[in-house]
Length: 180
Image (cartoon, rainbow, N blue to C red; front, side):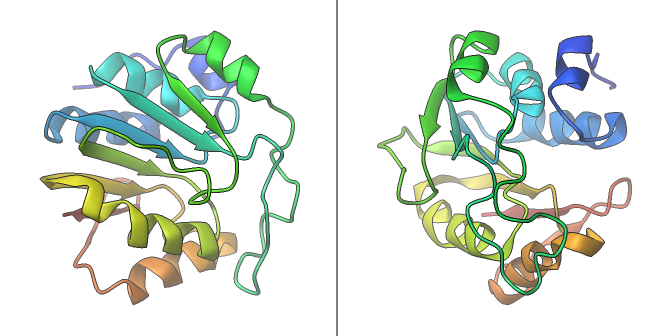
């Protein structure tokens, strides 16, 4: 099934329609529970998630751009993606719990998580996602890594490879998917 990627979603995301539809497909098949996105930017992919998954939606971002850059994080310098705000994302998705701050320092109590869209672009945040969120997840929950395999986001790929989790690389997008 293909989801309708609206103009608002396209205007607030740089993720391709193929990748957005793949995310929606896996999100719709994850167990019921909370949905989490780390790395929200303007909220385009989160808006699609809000139409696919009922239940609590937690959106984590600095809303001040990339917080740090390691040696493998060549495509996204500190401050990139700062052209957004928590208020704008909250207005776009009123039912969302929009959390401003550096993940995982900003983590709030959440109900058990069924699906995570990890779009943090770099090593440190991806590593934090892999350490903090699996214990909070429903068995069989999914974590989808948007930046896995992206040439200038090698930190994300390395963090997933180092995690010890078994993962699938999705044929249609090259993204990594972990089932916890």
